Image (cartoon, rainbow, N blue to C red):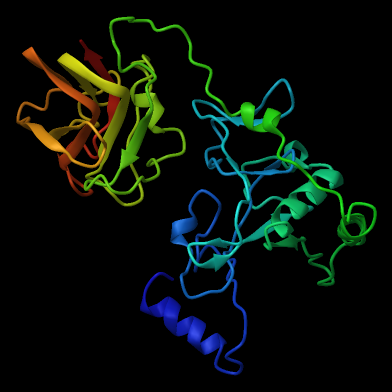
Length: 345
């Protein structure tokens, strides 16, 4: 839907009325879910805004696509192992030129791996979500399952949507819903004690980027976020997605620092045939914009542990490990896995 086909389809839909407003909410045509907004079709008026989970009036934007790592926490929330919850907070009417919109399931769940009994949020939380959108001139669409036997909306679902609507328009019409900082605080990462205090890369802000270092990208899987590449745990790893086989791993030391050693650990634990890189670059920067290449490493031996030493030290705040090879599917090693990066003064 990003290219000419999307444009052609939208033009066809508007052919009878050029003032028609379009918001295509189908994953086949527009993957405009929250957290992946940039993949929405640019020729529609409304963002598809498919919502997989609402938590206390907020839309969760972290992916929940692997049933093996989903669980319900002791305090009653849906969680994913090795991934922190993320939330979308409506702030303005438009996202990438499209009207703010959310397609919210009310009696079912778009994600089959999630038990709906886990996510059946209270009506008042739905009303809070609706107000947070309409307060910035966005919109909400309630998605209801259809009774296969007669094609009707089940009475229970209809009554629930009506009750939500009546509440929104009635006693809650003028009620304001300030952002609940305690909800967002749940998403803050709790950093454990550094197992290697001399490693200054531990739990510093890290990102998955395109090779040009000008766009942040998603991970290849929702359990391979950037923070897993510098969490001090050699049994977790990070790798980039969004179609970028050759991607970059960026880390922020938070201040310009003199560094004397960089240790890189690639691959999958106990499997040297997966996740190594044949060729990669190491670049550094003081401001995150101007980058200097300090290493261009060819790795014909396919080592998974590589160390760089600088007797006189090099100064930087940001460092990027940029995969050059493999740069596509069906190549030995597959994508570069960052199992761990360590940096020493």
